[in-house]
Image (cartoon, rainbow, N blue to C red; front, side):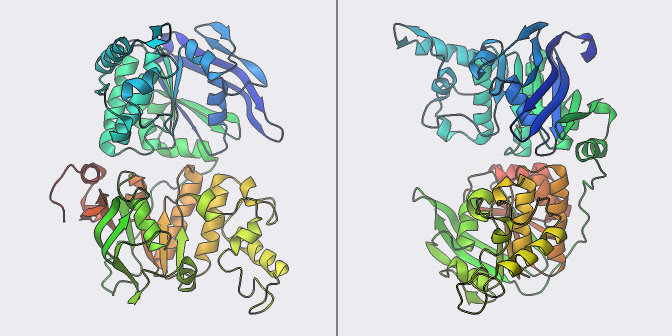
Length: 515
């Protein structure tokens, strides 16, 4: 096979500028994509990666600059224009109708037929042939809602291939996949490029960048900060190019074997989901002071319902939750806050912050009815000066990048919004901490900082329950790993005595020796 740089250039973006009213998102960016190449696009949040791909895919018009496909200058007014010219994009959040079949989803908007009659048989046959050709192994008649997330992603890829895509853009393609599903996806990608399809991957997982990509472009503050053959650089060098400083990628922590009594005890817990179906089944779990218990599992296996039950955001059908031997199963969220139980929610926008409120106001949520946030006990008069002063101290302590504490929290970057939540919850000296998806959607710099803060809480003796879809995060932080499958804890591991492959096997129900 010819070297990458000896192949045809299938895509070129020249001097791309995208200016929004107050933000220069892309500044004079130049990239090339070669035939049959896997190209990684790296950068921190806000670096301009997604904006650049949205310009390419016709979602944004560039302020200036040109796009060339196979040497021909093109201009896209919409994704439909891009699709017609052979571009396909698989977004991080899939664009599928769960109640429809695979074939129905794939042909949606491009239905074959005449006089308003869809030729479903022909479409199904084409979907089947495409699936076999590229080794996707997708049943064309399966309902999407019955499929695991890894197969749903293949449906999205099939949808692009059905529309004749020869340039495929994948946005965080492994964000919710198990290690086994990642391996399978990479095999699919390699099959695609072997047939001449060119692939652009937006990701923050540097290990996977090294494994799958031929070349990498690194964006920082809207500009290209580096370009390299991926095999020629280390993960650390890639991270440094992204952030502009040395980044510690490997968490260093002492192994702990706690023998003290648990702070939190969960016994026989049963919780239903929004559809009235049991999502957590007869769950038992202990968490001791100074340890992090990580819950690993494929999304949708009861982790959300478990977290909401522990935080009193969802009713418990049966079972008990004990905190320092007190039954807190039926207590209200406010009462849990009073007992020094802290919470970092998975969705920082819906449950962690009030985005129109200021940074200062967000730092006192939950404590807003007590001194020093109010003038005196039982007072309704806010002590705004004290709130602002305390917020400024937290901004400095937690390195929150903000123009000031009086700006709306919604104007901050995702990483800095997360730091506001950490500052609020950690500064209250909790005895128990529930942390769910703490670094979702964040870049390596923010991840490094947040992991260090979680470990600092552990080292202060806080009992921590960590729920994350990121196996690397689970392994980096946890003292014990509990695998959750279909609402049950099916296996406990010590992170030093297992690996991601074995944990991933239990995550998908691949081993039946449930405990």
